[in-house]
Structures are given as C-alpha cells and as structure tokens.
Image 1 (cartoon, rainbow, N blue to C red):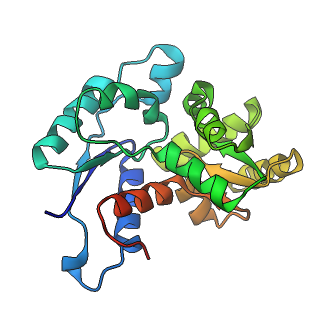
Image 2 (cartoon, rainbow, N blue to C red):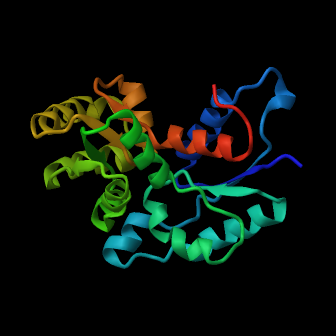
Length: 233
C-alpha cells in the first residue's frame, strides 16, 4: 500500500497552500496518478502559537488535536505541519498518536549542515519561535552555528509575517526594511538565512529578496516525499 501525507494546516492557510504546492512540484511524476495522496486539514481556528508561547494566549493544542484526529481517520501515514512555531507543541501531539510527525526544524537543520558546512546561519522567525529556542536546539544537534535577529529586526519580521502575509497589507511596504535587515545581519556574521516561518518564503519569493536562503517548507516537502517512497525532482 502506498504511503500518504497528512498536512495539519491552517497556520496559516497560505502557508498550507504553499506546502501542498511544493510537494506537488517537487515530486517526480509523469502523470496525475504518479503523485502522493495528501490529506489536508486547513484548520484556521487554531489559536495563534506565538501568543500562546509568549503571553498566555489560548492553548492551540485542542484545535491541533482535533485536526490530528481527522487526519488519523483519513489514514495518513505521516503528519507534517507548515508552521515552525507550532513545532513547540509537537511533543504533545506526537504523544497522542502512533502516526509519525516529520519535524520541519530537524529536516532544516540537516539541510544546513549538508549545504553550508562550517557556515553561520541566521534564523528569521516569529518571536514565539525565536523565544522558544526551537531552532537553536535543532541546529546545535547538527553542529550548525547560528545568530538571531535583535529586537528591532524581530519587529520587522513580525510585521512581514502578521501584517503583510497573514493580514493582507501590501508586501511592498516591507521591502526596504527586509532588505536592510538582511544587509545588517550579513554584516553581523550571517552567511545564509533560514526562513524559519512558513510565511517568510512567500515574502522572499514575492519581493525577490537577495541572499542565500534555506526554505524549511521545501525541506519538509522533500522529507515527506521521501518518507512516502517517492522520488524528489
């Protein structure tokens, strides 16, 4: 029996669509029938993960667990989440199911070690992800050095993520701040950038930002394709 993918999505909807698109585009397939069966629960009612981590916001786990139950019922062989910050809650979710989760952070750290050996990464992410230390631990496990944005730079990232991609403000309003952020972090020692929020690959692509990037969404897509026994283009 062919393996299938369950996407625990809605965090946010555009990031979920981006992951689905990347899985399809990256799968070696000659026709429709050669693609992986994918189940998507795009649960946009999952409370904000950053607010839950930083300020006692509503616990997202009950809604995430509800989506997990639906994906289990569909028969998913693995579960993936197109939200970096949501991985803070992954251990709680994994304890609820026998279906393996594929960690976006672990796969990204492996890609960093392979593609940029001896180089320094900079993690671009939400305040929740950065405060949790999720990426620092994942990168340390692969012996990858990293630096983090300062408070003002985190403000720029949060605006790009929440106001522009999630909130619908024009991305053009954050072009110059993002270009300056990348230039400043490069001057501070960053050799390449981890787009550690699933909205950030969208920002980088739409604004055609210049730099060396690791896209965790693509790394997650690649890992899920491989897990299911298919070939990656």
